[in-house]
Length: 300
Image 1 (cartoon, rainbow, N blue to C red):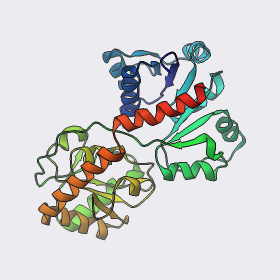
Image 2: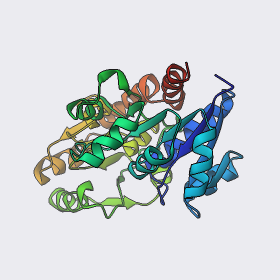
Image 3: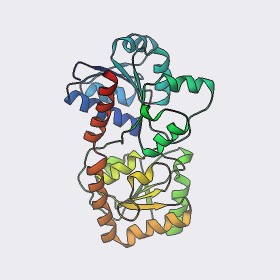
Image 4: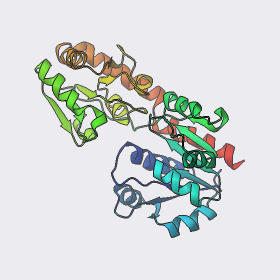
């Protein structure tokens, strides 16, 4: 496998969960002796981070994609737009990471684009089922969970955090409404990795979710989670053991918030179980190995 060259294509202009996964994957592949090259937008945090890590990385352009997509052995698209671009330009087997929970579009262009992919890496069983419902053959779909590094356990101060986001599907308004109802404060964090070092709970609400990489970051810090019971989130959060799954109602969310603050010993135990669950299922090493297995099958 060491002689195989993987071209990664990512179009994200922010450093979100998917971009962190690309960086973790490329580092893991480099450690395994597998060559990778990244194409990402000029000025993007991912392009900068990859370059600073000493990984092969170039500015994404039509010319660069045209050239490299014909020379690499496999092309791996990490976003929906990257999937579109690679479907047009790639002349090598195309691997697509599918991270979103919404249904695949049914139009002619979408059907053509999805036929172009040799294999899909679904971030959860829920996402895999969405692909199967769209008519993708089961042999072209594998579930490879996200992985995150194992962090030091949180100090578990009486401090609830939620991701700071403007995405209306991510439940910010609901978090505010539930916090007011519960009479608790929630910090909306723009740097979860830092703020989770002291939080006693993460509140992660969404209308639809592929898996929830922020939830994994909390588990890595032994921080219990209050999460919406939607999409792939129940595959990460074991209700009543590693966190609390709730319906998207202010009453349920408020009750879960109060419980985390009023039962610190039980909440801390949930966090410990969450950290163990992460070590069993959601490590970077397992994500890299699962991806490598797909590469090997296609390269063979």
